[in-house]
Length: 453
Image (cartoon, rainbow, N blue to C red; front, top):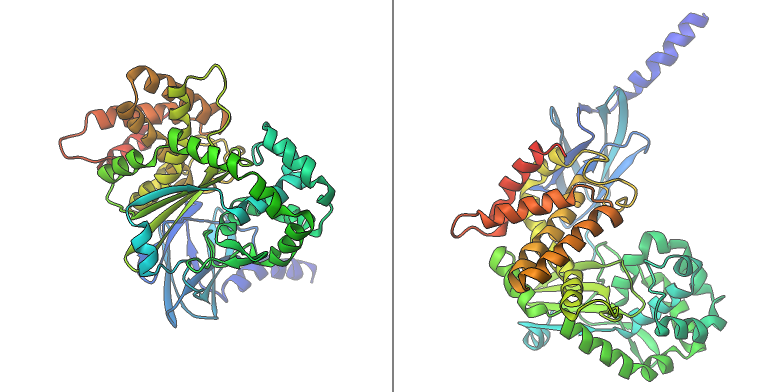
């Protein structure tokens, strides 16, 4: 009897598996398509999650999602509001996987003819008022106080902010944001830019539902508390009193982060096109930057969320400082050019850059949690080397590229960046007439597949 019970316990997982469809995989990272379009994201098999869920937004009633492994595929037919479950068998384990189709949210951006007429062909820098409010709240949190990369601590402005707003450090919005800050820092500050103050109230801009990458505006749950914090602390008086300081920062940004030459160069080397650039920043931002883009009414806008150009060290030449600050903008802008090309090579990238601990150390690069994300970070920074060699003197370009290669490997954890960067430079220099950077992807991936380090 005991032997029979043991046998049944061993058999039970297989009986459960047999109730759902299964596919096999020899690779941990696979790909998928939604309604015939290959996703730019990859799918990492994670048996520990039960289930591991893929949510996608759609306006179609019936949807076809296909997962592709190296040896198999699974077709999931999913209606809005329903789910499809199956197992992926990998290395003797099984990953319960669920696909859910959600009703598409409102458009992220809606551009009127007047907005397009005002902004087409232009770029601008801005320090948005609501974003500054959010950054001040973030600076007051225990997380913001502890994390000098998230919040810039080494300025007189930071000291002034902390002294001025310390009496409201126990406000409920500070504790509420602290709970999610490590996971939502980027999206909260991005979504903050979709709001403005109007007669003391925080209101949506008419053009934007959200500015982050998700389906919802992540700042919405905090609006009432933010308004209360702003009123109690008289935030708008503080902001207005610092407008001259902000204006100086905007001038510095225009000087050290010139956008037009970057825009022209990138659209010479890539096929993507944008009609407008908006660069937002705060003097409270340090090393965490992001970008997003929006398209509506035949108008494409690219937005960056970065740091200021304040704080040039006395021993840093203006030329090197400009190269460094331009790189900050460039490596956000060019995600909007690099990523669409990478989308065409997702399977190759997944195979070549799927080496844990080889291309990236996995700790400092934890937020780059797929081969696709790692490759794009390599590529966006390496492409800046090509731009720098063309726009700066040979001495400045060489000095900054050396500094950048060290930063990527030693500080950011992209371990083979120097070799990758020098390979791209050599490949670019040896390109045939008429070839653009985007045409070099096959050569880059062939090299990476052979590279042993």
